[in-house]
Length: 104
Image 1 (cartoon, rainbow, N blue to C red):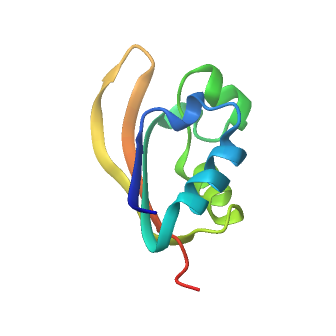
Image 2 (cartoon, rainbow, N blue to C red):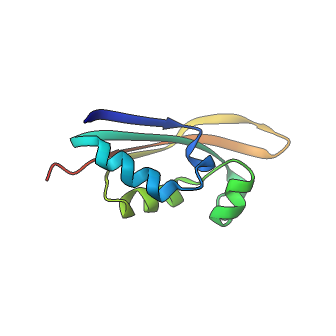
């Protein structure tokens, strides 16, 4: 059993994200920590999950719903975690979600 799992800038690429979350939850010991970090452009935040994924990003509210649905308890969402300088696509940021496997 794992104490923790960390996914940075890769969750948006996982086409089988529901299965990955189930397997991660199963691999963690009770009370184990799951940390997810992704980026999002402000202009894309209200787009559908599919549209966000096409641009290799994901909004924190989308991930939060998926992580909770998988059975994790959300400990903290830090949004923004880090602001990025504007580029040709506009202003963007990194966010972090910290969750835990219930201690049941």
